[in-house]
Amino acid sequence: MPILNTYYDPPLIFKNGHVSTVYSGLFRKGAKIEQKRERITLSDSDFIDLDWSFAKKKTNKLIILLHGLEGNAQRAYITRSAKLFNDHEYDAIAMNYRSCSGEPNRLYRSYNAGATDDLREVVAHVLTNHPKYDHIIMKGFSLGGNMLLKYLGESIRVPKEVKAGIAISVPCSLHGSLQQMNRLENRLYTNRFIKHLQEKLMEKHKAFPSLLSLEDIKKADTLFKIDDLYSSKAHGFKDALDYYKKCSSLQFLRYIKIPTLVINSLNDSFLSKDCYPIKEAEENDDLYLEMPKYGGHVGFFEFGQIYHSEAQALSFATSV
Figure (cartoon, rainbow, N blue to C red):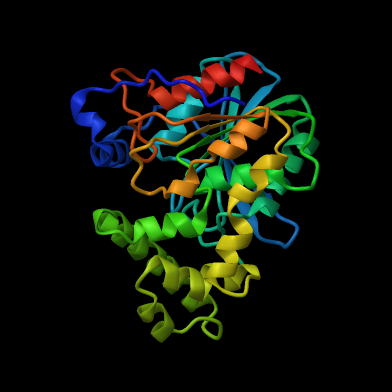
């Protein structure tokens, strides 16, 4: 599809990508919604927690929301999206990845940017146990956006009930994004992620001391080292580079066969040049790409309750 034109023009201060990223990530308040938690047991005996919120009327429509790295179903960008779709006659599932719902998961593995096996099980659970939903939209943010795009482009057939995908601020090239995160301008973000991930590794050490040593955790002081030590090997990859190569969604975009919208801002400091899939969008009639000049990473501030990316997502969902 041709690249989408964008009209996004935020207030002056939010034209700074870092302001947009930090404000939306740390200071934006979540929506006041009632969430009902459902725990599902996965095929490997682990569990995932799903946080449901509901439209005011009974509906056959559902949106599945996928959070970013070290996020959860209570993040503002998740609850705001859930409320917006609830208000427009969609029920919502906010998926918490393994270890992200406030309780450590049972196994040594947890989640990663390409864990479509878990996403596939969630979709299967919905179709089996909640068969009234025959119109499903899926929306992913950052790492969750990469997971979603990979899922949609993999060789395993996407169920007919899944009508569209929406991916926001997506690191389509995981290695390219990692190299971008190593830049000095991203040091504060990177340090925050490292701190959270090392805390998770400490939990894994306590549960599986023979698989992960304290010494190794202390040495894992960069995102690459954490991925090389744990994210890759715990999930069956040779090393970090193998993980990035096999899980980057860029290579799957050409195979997507349902309407899919990607919104990546041009001033997103987390994204490298190859995270803007212009060629892939031009060659795939089902792939729509919007590249606003502004927005930062999962930012897109607008006055009022609804951000630009949220309004675009709703408009796209209702058009398919």
